[in-house]
Image (cartoon, rainbow, N blue to C red; front, top):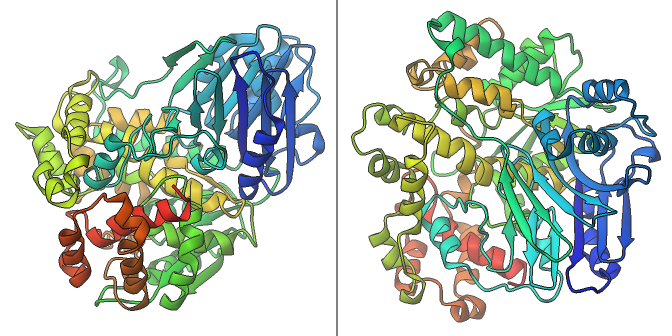
Length: 590
């Protein structure tokens, strides 16, 4: 897990080492263990390293194999790198390091761009063919690792965070109206390639982008998620599905133990993270470091789930660490949390993951986390009604989106209103092949889009702010494919994730499985009051906000007057959603 950046010139000029150094410095928290820059005429790559696999300097980046004529910068982890290395060794390749980075270079030389189909893991990498000048950029199937791009006719820059790119001059930082619409309507999810500013895009997941020396770009998609059953799936009963899911999850958890440093677990006390702990123990792991965070109660809402995380920690005898954060500490941390966001992310979980990651990084460099289970195993309340929906686009939009287009017109100033981009995006996604019924269409959208640009991005940004690598076994692509093909009726049973709950019964205590569904609660950011409310009001009434002129002041003032009366369908604060965007723009001087 690291940070990567670079500049590629298309106009015959040399790439700027100074620009790459500026971006690399901005990415320093992602890779506190080392740094490097490679400059070659029109190409300059930068890398920040977090040492997790092959702790020696042999695995430092940027990595170049002069014999093969390839250079690489890579962020992530290839979990099956040892198996691939053995296969490549049989083909005659020799290795100078013991890590996964060099395996990518050899695999590309052996199999070309199709090598990515062999990779198990999370990855964003950029590879240079030194002889041809061709640059290849790749992002993993489920977008676990980020890759942002900023380009003109003269150059292309890339980085692991948007804000590394905006530290340089020449980036168009005006608001993208499509992204603004998604942020305010599509539950703050801004799908790739858009970002909140016009001058930066993100490479979509499962995408290979190639750039020729003249700047010509070609994209190809190397993976699609299908919900259609295979011939082997025909005739399977529920027990068979459940058994296959548990075995696939066992393998996913085992894969994510690949490291030359200890691996801990972020333990919320919910089904998903508890199951990871149980499977690690089952696999023979002992003295597992587990970590939980909690906050003060606000508005009668519980601010922690320690009762359940304690139960799991005691049951499996983990080395448990509880972090209790008083509300007074929230405001102190908010500027740093927002500074760590590559894009504005409205979820209350951000500050929880940020403060938890700070504490965790003092003990381990790698953790497993339970993100993704709700999206792939139908854990949310909006899935069951879609099973027999005659208008799934309308039904999904009503329960998931924060506001419809009419409500948008009362919030945004007229110059920012145009098409109903979010509904159009949902309709286009739902119409694509590979998912026949409403529930599968929703699951596909949530797995391949919402999950990428909400929970997964949140975990990456907040953990990497402290040089902590988070691994997500529920997003093992083979497990995701299996879950997609599993009949929806098994997933939505028992108020959601039914088949996963049944699979878990042989691993973890039933008290955790049958508990009411929880989430990572930060009540102080939902029921805004006191110093947090004052901070929000100051931002929204500032000169910068007035000059930006995004929002209708009357609507914003109604939010401020009674924050708890304005809650989105998915239990978020409308005021916090508006304020977070303005705070993010101000924090990053955009």
